Length: 266
Image (cartoon, rainbow, N blue to C red; front, side, top):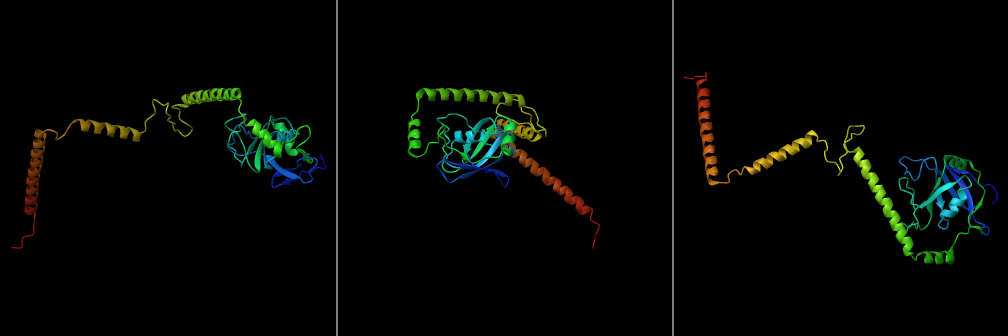
């Protein structure tokens, strides 16, 4: 630790850090309270800090060690770019490995609101990130560690698969139960959400008309109009009868119009 190095720039508070005691160059981290709309529950507003300018060699453990000066830290997550709606994954995962190349952002979640408020008021000093007690591996030592950790333990893999599937089944059951509870229930604006589980969805007038038209078409198709030869003859005779009737009506209408004329030149 050295002199106090804490200022504010455009709403972000600054922390001056150094990689080790031997380093003369420092690196500045910028952080502020994570307060956005539609934030994921894993990044609760009021307990989460948003940290910028995190270098590639800083680890989640070193960031957690740094920010626990303000209170107990529940979790730390690195992401390539800010994403308020993305869930923090705390799994020691064989499937969801979070390898980010280059600079990144971090989300620091405290266990209580008091710790976050303390972090926003804390006067930071220049912090050493890699110490003898908790060193950060770099270079060849880091590559050897990554290579050794790339070998998968079958038992650990099976344990994680079982845990993941158990959580997945529980989550699906909960979602189905919630869908059944909300099925057929109108929202604040009166709309009813129809899901694949809906058996008796309310019909609108448009839907009702489409169903009736479709049913009428089905009944019409069953009649087999003009299928037999006698039906064709009857249809032709009926058509001729209608033409004769129309011809007689037209003759009567013309005769009436002639009789009604008042202009007689002779």
